[in-house]
Amino acid sequence: MWLKLACLNTGQTVVAFHRNDANFRQYRILIEKRGQPLDSTRKPMQEHIKKTITRDCEAIQIPSGTNFIIPAGTEFYITQSLGGSHTVATDFGLARVSDANADALGMESAVPKITESKPAVETASLDVKAIWEQLKTCYDPEIPVNIVDLGLVYDCQVNQESGGARVEVKMTLTAPGCGMGPTIAAEARSKIMSLPGVEDANVDLVWDPPWNQGMISEVGKMQLGLI
Image (cartoon, rainbow, N blue to C red; front, side, top):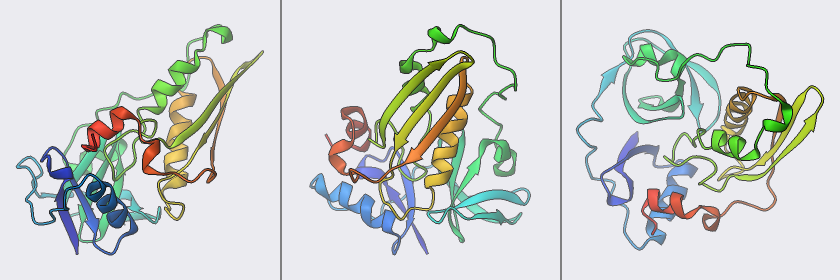
């Protein structure tokens, strides 16, 4: 049984959790630290209407990170569509669906296809700021804030070499036990690799220091209604 929750009583975002899910408990803490009780009885906005999967659809179970198939005909709600992926709530629980399978959700792909070849550029032209901006297009599948503003990215280094730039990123998760870590890290690496001038990229998951709410940026806190 999953719950549809109005995010931080703003009515702007609807999130869905299993009540016994660690992510539900964590999100509840974020809300209650703001000094407002969590209202699990509020109804979602009208645009969050029930839909039906049009074909068997590849997805990733949240938070286990397990690949599975959502059968055609399954009813679902879209709780989040950000950064080229969609979080859906079904009777199977929460799942992440890539934009490549948007048609199964009755949607059109919003992300242009990335060509295999990248334009040749001078390696010195690669700016670390471009990498940080690219990382801002990666999102936690359950919280509508990008991984940079959520405070999950600890470090980003660029090593310029003759064949191109090698990028090293260290990031963490809001909860060490979350199985979505490899999926989020792989997405971050893929988006970094799409940048001109990048020869290779490595995204490591680290747990020291442990993530805490104080690591969320001011922008992130505003999006979550914490300030």
